[in-house]
Length: 118
Image (tube, rainbow, N blue to C red; front, side, top):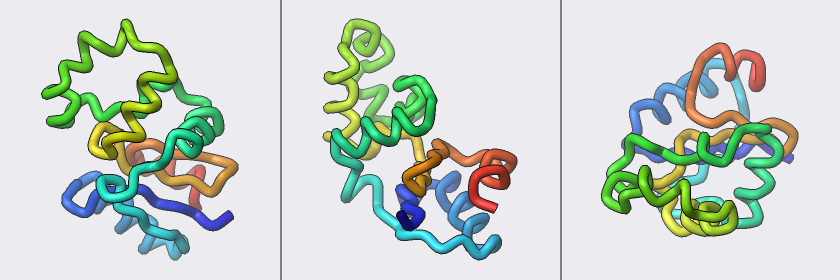
């Protein structure tokens, strides 16, 4: 599977991650996380493959997260409800998400990218 990069063009963290990928000659398919967020099934795969807790996929500093009052609502939601919510609005997802089907990174931290994509 080719590397898929889910990002948002206006996000500074996404721009840094994309620049890193470009500078390191990493070939990837770019998807706008707002226009085409991962579907529920794809999100389940990403979460399982990443080994991260589901809550790590939420963009807790985003406007959508705050407007929906998710800080208070998430603890009472099932994982299925959380995944459906993430699939419904790409702006709720922490970004960028980068995957090759075997590994997944969420957000951008250079050491993680070096280990995963270099």
